[in-house]
Each structure stands twice: as structure tokens, then as C-alpha cells.
Image 1: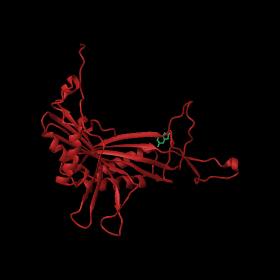
Image 2: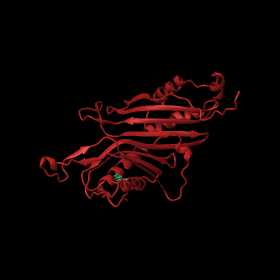
Image 3: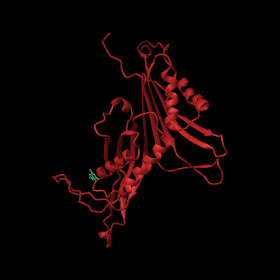
Image 4: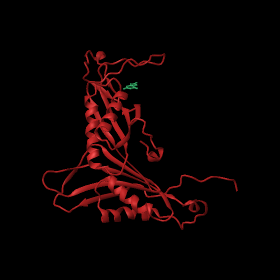
Length: 291
Ligand SMILES: O=c1[nH]c(=O)c2[nH]c(=O)[nH]c2[nH]1
């Protein structure tokens, strides 16, 4: 038989939907999560021979999500993934783990402590990975849709024979922010840090007079690093959701920045990672995270 190499094996349950209600007081606390588990380890013979004697069934992994939620509760997405990691890293043949969670926002309805409305705002994200004894915690947000109706310019870019874009000194800037950041350590108040990043990034978006979406991305990333010292580095990716001023001249009307066409595609796609000084970025922390 030809000499093939087998690598990057992992298996787990994707998108386990877990809704956890903390009923310890009349003001219930809701966590609505979408959890994915992945185990790495000594599982090669399942692939090469169909020998399942080391395979922790993905169904078992799914059950662990529900059982560990019952036993430990869900304090935050990150804290819950750390509970899963502590369990699975101790199981036989497991050398590494990868857990991800999306967390959907519910806002309280004022009438009582047990009624909520699903908020249309962003989705919170979290990842915990282990490599033996090492643990990496990443957190983030996605689908944070923001727009400013002025305070954005774009000019000074090179012009060649393919360039038709007009320079602008006043445009709509709109995007859907995806940000993912790595915590340097494990001792973090993840909820407080998330709230601080959210406030810092939306504040920077609003207050930065933007000469390019690139500049706004840098301002949002550095604001997050300023706000939360526990963050080692942050990746930000933003589509440029173009809003084109409609030419109303053929209709005999002017258009002083009031009527726009919101295009859905194509869109610019702009991203960057901002870290602290010369602190190295360990690529293992970011393995399998498409941010
Ligand atoms: O903020 C922007 N950055 C770009 O790189 C770019 N390219 C483009 O066509 N429009 C914009 N806007």
C-alpha cells in the first residue's frame, strides 16, 4: 500500500444547542448557546482500521454538554467551555481539545424576571483549546452591524487604468464587525471583559473620523486593547457594506447625501490583527478559528 500520512484528526459534535436557565432566584439568568466539541488524540486506528476502541462517540460528547451544564451551570460561554475542557482533557487517548460556543443575546422584558426578547444585536463567540496542559481562551463577537451616516471619507488611493471610484469626503460607513481576541491568562471576568470590548469598539467606530475602514478597524482594535488589559491580541474583520449615492439628476433632483442604494455584494473585505508590543502570537491558539 502507498505510504500516506494521516494528520489533523479530530472528532466531536457540532452545534449542540444548549439553553440553560439559572433559577436560583426569581430573576432567572438565561444562556442560549450553540456548542461544538472536538477531541484530538490517539484515534488513528478508527480511520485506518475502523477500530473504535479509542473513539469517544460524538453522541457521548453531546451528552457531556447537557450533563456538565446541569452539574456546573453556565456562568459564561468561556467558563462553560473551560468546564468541558477540564472534563475531556482528562479522558484516555485525548491529547488536545477544541470547544466553540456561540451565545445568542436575550434581553429582559421588564414585566418579571423570567421573560425575554431575543435581541437583534450581535452574537457573542468563545473558544477554548487545550494542548496537553496548555489552555487557550479566545472570545469574540460577530454580526455587530454598525453604520455612521457621515464622518467617513475615502480618498488619496492610487489611480490606474482600472480605477473608476470617485474620491469622497463624506460617505456612509457601514459594516458588520467580526472580532476575536485572545486572553493572555485564565483569570478573567469574561462577561465584564466582553461588555468593555463591546463598548470600546462601538465607541471607537462612532467617534473615529474615518479616512478608511482600515483606520476604523485599527481604532476599534486598539480601543479594545486599551479597555481590557487581559487581552493579548485581537483580530478584526469587516465587510465594507457599500452605500452608493443614487444619481437623481436624470429625475431632475439633487441628492445632497440623502438617498442611497445599499448594495449587498460585492463588498470590500478588510481585516487586521493588533497585538501588544512584540508579544508573540502563538498560532496554536488560533487553530481552527475562522476569524
Ligand atoms: O475604507 C475603504 N477602504 C478601502 O480599501 C476601499 N476600497 C474601496 O473601493 N473603497 C474603500 N473604502
